[in-house]
Amino acid sequence: MTAVPRSTDVVVIGAGQAGLAAGYHLRRAGADFVILDAQDAPGGAWRHAWPSLRLDRRATPRSDRSDQGHGAEP
Image (tube, rainbow, N blue to C red; front, side, top):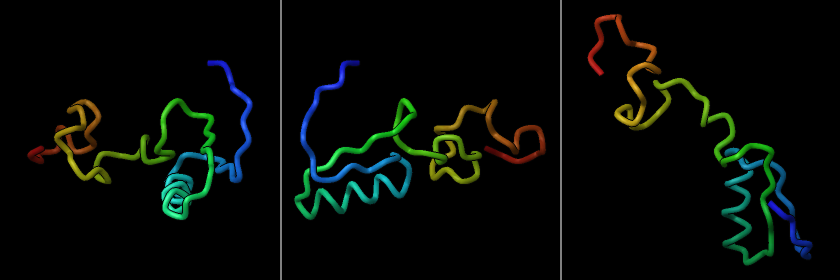
């Protein structure tokens, strides 16, 4: 990916929960901003959270579920 130089008012470092929330409020305020993150996708630690924290367990592969093999229904 080639970086294109540009001018911006605000730089948000990190695309985790706080960075995305900051981006949301900056957008509502009409600010010119960019969010930078070292990862390949936004979401921060939530992308790596254990299955019980996810809202939709059906989206979690069975092999990743912590309750597999303990008699619990998915």
